[in-house]
Image 1 (cartoon, rainbow, N blue to C red):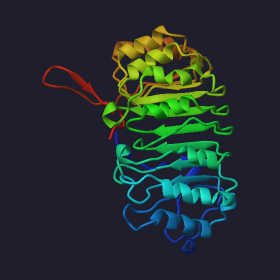
Image 2: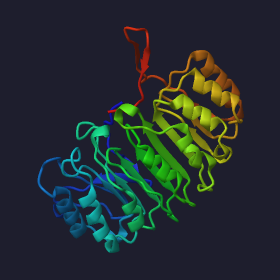
Image 3: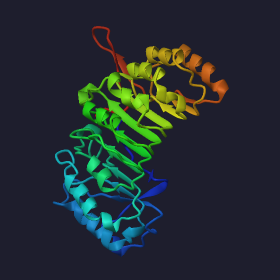
Image 4: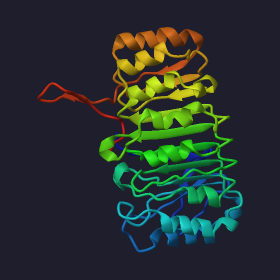
Length: 318
């Protein structure tokens, strides 16, 4: 699956792309939208920072609650260090900022696996009041362990999530975190974690308020499902999301044979490779308890190569 659409909202606010000349048009009230700052790739040197300066000059930034960082200059070669530096330099002008997404790009701008990232914890350390943070792209991505008191939602979208990032998140103290969404990806695009690397997350000791856990888009989705089936954190979840990956009957059987999931509000398994009999067992086990189940497999793709091996794909790779 390619990413064809930009974020439509952030922090419960509709996304609004700041026009190139924001002083020439009527703008929405600063606190009513999530402002998307973006430039055409390769348009001009320091283009994103210049656009950010125009935004700051035209908008009462003291009221801005959510920012979306779109394409910056040549993201397939450059990480957003300069853009993060600009954000940190303006933090005194952004006292109400509570949500930030870094790297809102669709495939025609820069493929998911091509987006160059950096150590994104500099943003979290620089904005200790952030409640929502998301990042797209795994190349060069770093997330050393930290403590953040107010972060409620963390999303990391990649075609291949480096194991160091998985371990860094697992070692972080995030006492307010309610929503964690990790796209683990494939080894072809840099994923090198194993279920054992997820144990600090699945244990839940550093995530006492976690209610929504998504470990998805993985080529090892069966092994992830088996680890989740016995994970202590699951008992307190409302939503469990193992979608977008190569989940087969093996993973589904492990889930059904593990701890009860009848307390969940939703189990999301869309984009899967589970046979119909196992799908029926999942529904029969959980739907009577009121669990909403997503088993849509309309976008899955597989083929059999010359030696008979069945090749299956995650939803978002390149």
